[in-house]
Image 1 (cartoon, rainbow, N blue to C red):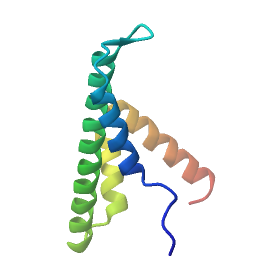
Image 2: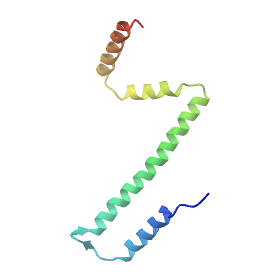
Image 3: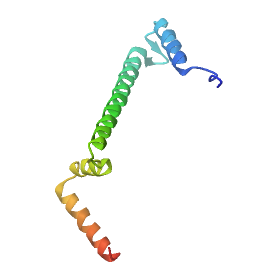
Length: 103
């Protein structure tokens, strides 16, 4: 298997090193420190989101191995986010549509 023409991890590290070496506080009217702070915060949150997604996946795997239906669990989670009136309206429409289709 051939390697990729470039490693994005190394490119990102090199880019950060170049940025750290440039002490100019403003480039083209942009507050460099503020911009860097925003980008760093977003990158940290994206890493946390990735870790949380992995944790959630592990929980669903655990639920599946315990005999629970993961699709139904996800449906329940979606329902719990809705208002009771909205759930009732959807269930009523679902019932009407089922009867209309002879189900």
